[in-house]
Image (cartoon, rainbow, N blue to C red; front, side):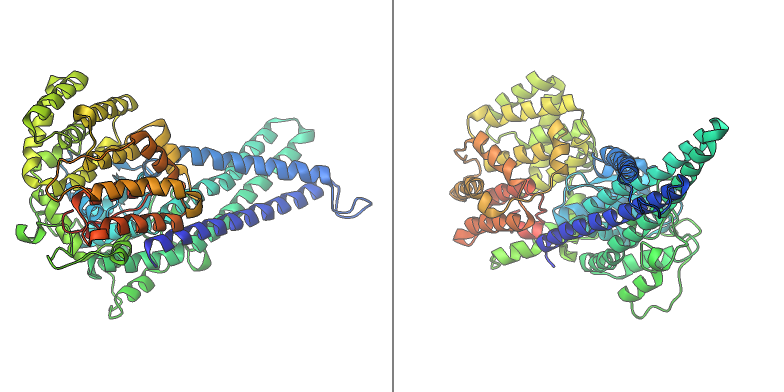
Length: 617
């Protein structure tokens, strides 16, 4: 199954989820209605029979209002994506300047996985109060994703095991599972709210007069019991949605890392004394998110949201001897800031493509087939790239000020006169000190070459998402002025501008993340032609013309990209296929074409891995 098929399947599973949820709600309405008939003495006989429209309307309307309100409340709380889910579960965001060696190792693993897969680097959280071994990925799209691991995972897992766990979570990101999981979490809270309402009624009944207290308290008790019944329904829905996805994610983790020892080793330790228990009060709502059974660790059979750990291990490692590994003590493997150095020689990571041989010719099928996948060589090369970035730059771009400096530095021209004018723009808009920082950043990243520009921007995206709305608006104004300093638009400037639009905080960003595409290619013909013309213009730039510009109507292109965000998975595949065909008209994937295709892919929520970007990327 390729990336786009996985997205289509996610749409189908979303419809199945709503059907199951509707069945659960209708079943609970029927139970409450039958109880109300008995409590009110109406019964099922008599001239009116069992059908009493007014009573049914009150019961159904009240329950739908409570469940709908609960679902709306939780959905609104989670509209910011994965970071909101992690925060709800007690996660603390890993600071970019953390001195905790285990946290630094986690950041490195996530960054490497992101660069290798083409997924924007997600926010990283640690569940500091959780000693079990567990993890999850959450978010609406690849642009607001978050990866969280427990403190127990950091203490118990080797680097290979941690990489296997992160690869498992990246599979959920790439396969479209996250959005469905967040939606399910919102719906389940609506059902859970019935229990809360029942407790309120039961307490209220106890304080009322004797004539009505019994009836009110009884209704409250019924709602409490109904809420628990709803939780049971929710558990069944969670299991139906998540069980088979865990097998797929395990297999993907092995495929991504080319090692079964990583994810299998983590599962073997989960089966030991440390376990995977999550103690947070909200864990039951998010049970389907986790790597392994969390809140309901004792549940089995149809109520378990995850397959048995032993079964998962045997599918990965059929020769497993059946023994789990205990991880009671701290990790015996030393973890230090220096022990995470790259194992790849610089010559092995100079490029970003597994097909970087001179006689290798990229193709449209190869490009599309690489989307949503990871390769061991790409992962190794990504790790090497991260290590080649100067330590000072790596630490700086993990902070909002440093990430903003990087953005300005990436736009500075090689022409001394133009660069001077651009630095004056930075000084006027952000201050003289920031202009000096941008120039210093430019000096530091220049030796990495132009092929490092997009990966460097990827590394800075988590910090850029943390800037305030005011800082975001100011930075976008500065970026626009830097791009227009010479009255023209370079392909990389076009790509950077639109990638920033997708990631910088703004009132429209959350709406974009919440939208689900449904338009087909026939409805987007005009917009597709506009963006394909941009690819064609990028391809017309001479091979040595790194500073050649494209004549563009940016407003027109922006409007086209905005509408393309509503494309269905099938339409997105068609648009990217046409874009790559246009880029490969001469049999080559030039740097300018790579940058423009990347910007189009960003608008379509499609991760473009380095393997697909060609030798020059």
